[in-house]
Image 1: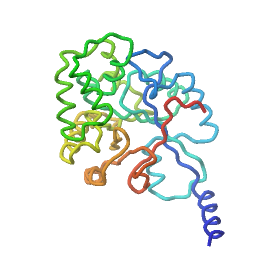
Image 2: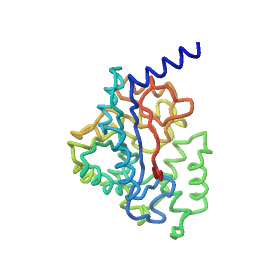
Image 3: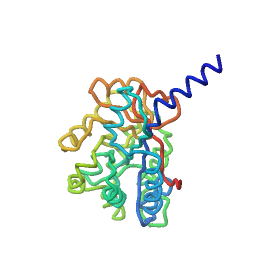
Image 4: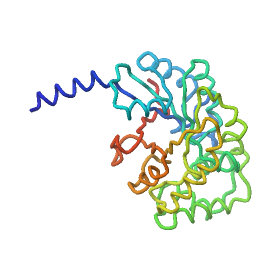
Length: 281
């Protein structure tokens, strides 16, 4: 039996060459303390080097093309790769310029509140709070940032998150241009770059009720679906979801996008991706 299984796997590898989806967060030629977060940051030089190395092994396609290839179950004689970015950080414009020069498509998953309301998420406040930049958070705010960042608040997660954000009288100056602007989003090369959903806010979906999750999705959809290069793919912040939330997306004809590994690793559930933040191939 084991010989038969090995032979079957070998045949499948011959018939279905790999189809890999990679993702990045922040990419820049310059790291800014308090603004950029080390473990989700890739230098522009490493990014370009990685893309050139990957291009030797893979044919780059758009996320939509890759999903159609996978769903069709047609034999794949070539290796395919997809590039995506999470959150919509402004510093990815440097990386997009590299991809544009190389004629490589990509998808940017956007938290629309941060683009249109010029605000930020808890991860950004945590980064700033632990940098050498002086920002005067109250003790209560600091405690709430630590707890939300550490995913320690299981009860009233969204209420606590929203309360923290409402308590900030203004956005710290260093974070004011952290995310893409509406004009920058509109200005993306529509022949190469598509816009996907990442939630109106970067909530952890596992800590939202299904009703809160749907509200977060629908507000993001209302903000982004007007763009000509919008695609109906929803990328889960933090990468994981409950089965009921995956079904909510399917009911709305949206494609779930998650991270590889953990209980979610079932390719029938959606698109799975490999993190490339800080990686040097």
